Length: 247
Image 1 (cartoon, helix red, strand yellow):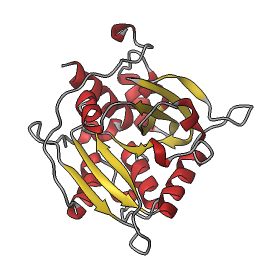
Image 2 (tube, helix red, strand yellow):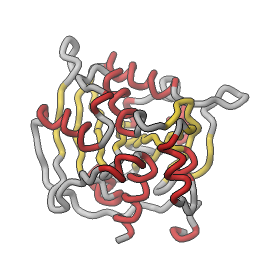
Image 3 (tube, rainbow, N blue to C red):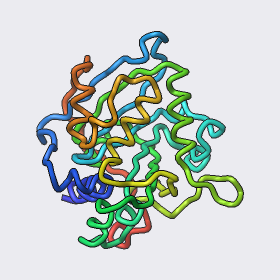
Image 4 (cartoon, one colour):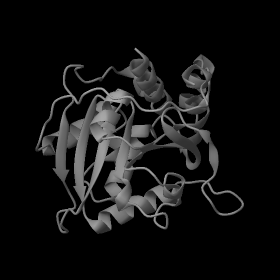
């Protein structure tokens, strides 16, 4: 139950309107994991996982593929094996007890965005089980494509007076943090559109405007799927300390 509540909180925080308009969670009995190769003119030398929390999607990058120079927040997670990054409405995502007003405000007009970055220090399978991720698709990108994706992530951060990504406090689970985003959340700029835009920058053939919901984004990627896998075993990861209920 705890995993379901955590997954639902992430999903609604990242994509409020799609959560109201559509129900697109995958079957609880299977966790499809697929490999996709993109950026055809160049060989795929790196992998990026697109993860589906239900209504919310995010990206998981191999930490060894990311330098602090390419994406400065990497320095905040030196022990990570992988790093998950998601995006959504700043007020709702971070609220201890979000209500209907924050949900309505997020979809009624453009609101500040926030990046949620999580250090993964377990296996990916264990992390997927812990967070309640319903689906994962592994995408192959070239070195140039990965660099463009990291450029996209870096440019989306709001910076502090020292020129560093602005930290807004601990994240929702595990070793995680929130970072202020320069981008604004609105009806046509959901977490899934944000993910699709990052993938497009990496050379993945997706259409962000057709990826408002998680189901529509994943549907664009599934036809390229090569290797499906079953749901991984459950795992236990440390909880974030900013939530009293999880201490």
